[in-house]
Image (cartoon, rainbow, N blue to C red):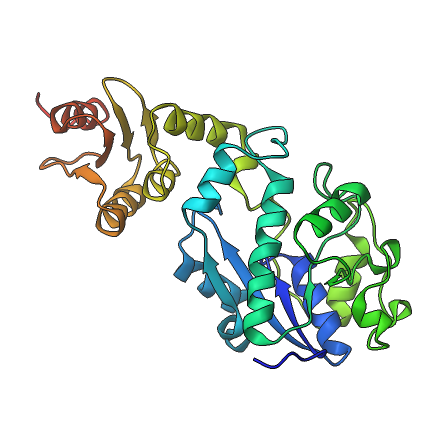
Length: 298
């Protein structure tokens, strides 16, 4: 597609900062295409549920405009062995940001866009939103000068849209740090009344979940289906590796995952939990299902 200086790709997380970044750039007269990069570590929702959630927060028209890009094996290898290491848990934030921006760069070429928008705020996160880290990520992604950060524009070198006279940094806020007072005021001014509270959508920042991921890596079970499975129930590494549901919702989730990814599951013929078999036998799975119910006779 022919390149346009008025089209941008926006990395959209679903949170307040990214929606504000998009709205502020749109207000400046640009056409913005939101890009949601979905990984198996993104909360406990599937891609179709993500779009539904976006629609409930920001409207159906906006949700329908969002590209949802699902990552594959290349991303899992990044998580397994990140070049720039992990944060406090198993979160490879710098490598992850570079990876996401490279995906955005491909969509730039596909849609004829000339820059990428992010909702980054200087100093908001310790590992990946320091100024030196942000500039390193920009350079490694191959997007030097092409990343517009509307919430913290003033703290970074001049971008190409500014050099072309299309953006004035004086039209944008100068936000830094973890405080969200300014963002909340801007949201109110823009008529944005519903948005999720900051909670760190990536499960790799969670200590408990990171321990589960390490078990998958150690057992050579590190693939998308199994990663989804360990979001639910009890993970038990005895005579194999199993996930035992704790309630009916988790029963349904594990059965859905068995259909989506071919995961073996034991569905009891008694009132009890479904057990996903990541590694092991159906007999052991039955024993585990029996362990967590009063309605089974072994």
